[in-house]
Image 1 (cartoon, rainbow, N blue to C red):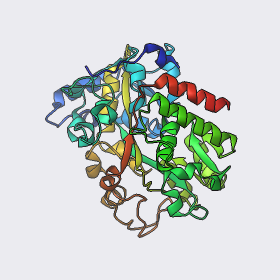
Image 2 (cartoon, rainbow, N blue to C red):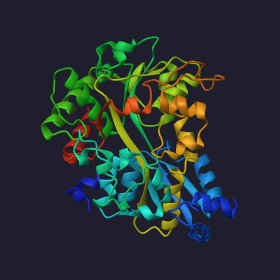
Image 3 (cartoon, helix red, strand yellow):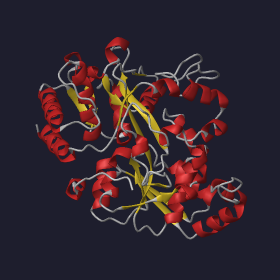
Length: 410
């Protein structure tokens, strides 16, 4: 079993045919007879999930219910720190947590997670290599393939990836130039004092600070996703100093909050999710997504089964549904990626070409995207080749949380 030696104390801080198809009927990995049986069993189960509004969407849950025949679905939007706190406090309100890869140890090492067998996820046959083959430029543990598996033989998963992306900097091109924005140092540039923003998740914010400090010559950290205690101390002090100087307009944690701050002009540069940039553009406001010279932050989110759930089959079916292609359309058209190549078969070819292949938009304007526009950053392959680090659970988690508390209280 793939495990990290982490102190538990640190964790506390439609039709039958449609059902069969959604569950894998007609594939060589799950015969239709078994699929029908699962569909019948699912009618007596519920799916209660929590996670970011990125994936916990009423539309997707409603479509899953129709496709699978599950008895009921409910979703609760919550930030990762908030969901983690509730789950570790002993709550039994949820069957799965749509968790980001680096926070998986919070539930695996505290015995709050249950494995999901690959054999119960027939759409896994179309998964991208990113989630099965380590990239030689990083240690296995420092990338997503080293986080999601329970075993080296890759037979059971702690988390089934549903969406992933390479995050960067959102900025107002009417104020901030492309050259200025294409570095993580832009977040901390005194030129944007009072108009910069950071995410409230310390596992995100501190990594970005370290990327910037490397570029500024203040640090030589090899892995911003897993900094040493000394690097954390330096990064924390850097953030505290910037906060006291009035650098940050806001520490944002909600998608809507991020969109409003960018659209209003209150923030002109910030760490951002690409869908938020797209949402601002859809309002007719100037907004772009940078291509940082240091590289992107890579992450993946997906359902992790919580131990003791009475709805295990529903969780496995939900994870499998995410890889079926159809739900990937919703997140892809927001600016994320589906981990499954099934998306190419399900998505409109023109839109797939724009979102995944870096080709110009063709056809009528849509949500701020006009004829001839290109996706910021280019194709999936181009962006995947420019990754600074994958998010991971840091070895010095206690020190990170302590330093972040100092930052918040400064």
